[in-house]
Length: 300
Image (cartoon, rainbow, N blue to C red; front, side, top):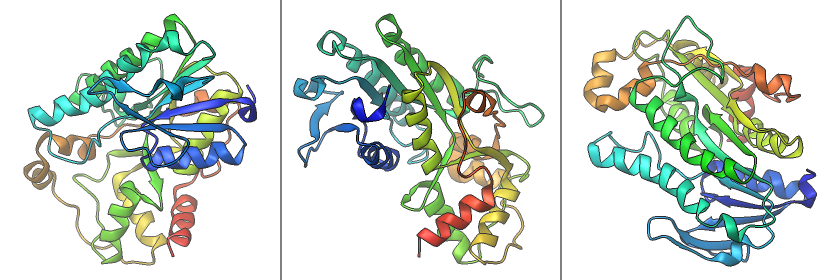
């Protein structure tokens, strides 16, 4: 499937990853449309999955549908209400889009974002895509998310990208962590030994292109590598030419400040990207320091 011949509709396309993906696809001459609650340009169309409203004009001749929707996992404490929002924004949006499958006769593929936290936290094991879901909250949220994406498999091939921590100079985790580190306050969290799976945003968007062009179905770990929390923060400090000498932030303090949400920082996942490599994908930023140096340079 040549990218230049595709009409690609991105739901949740106004976020950090969505905008980066749009730029990547348009550079390769794809026709890109965005679903958003607040359309502002000619290629943006209105939708509101909560109200079950969608401008069906957006679906005309769409060959690839991508859903990146999902409330930010780290944007608030995991209260009961917040958990409902996290699930609803992922599961309900996929289910709502599937209601329009009969309105997309040209559709050739559905791609859903997912989370690398699908796996049971384990420091001694490298997790592969064919492993069962873990039991902690994020694992089960991811299971429901992916199950909703597989609704489309009744009609078209489905690809699922389990996304690691995305590194981008335009926001997200890198902006938060580099801001702290620039003040000389960077440090490890908890034991510092837990893994952080990460990927540069340019590699993540390239994965979507690779999946489309090579017609890859199934689940893929969107991860460049996994580093221990302490080494992750140490490399960030080095790239910013800042000191790294403070003791680790105690795990008990993280739990006190963040509640259950602290598990996403204190429980590590070590995930393999071998399946993507076997499918011919090559990472532009396979090394953490190289990724950080590029981000630091582009942030100036």
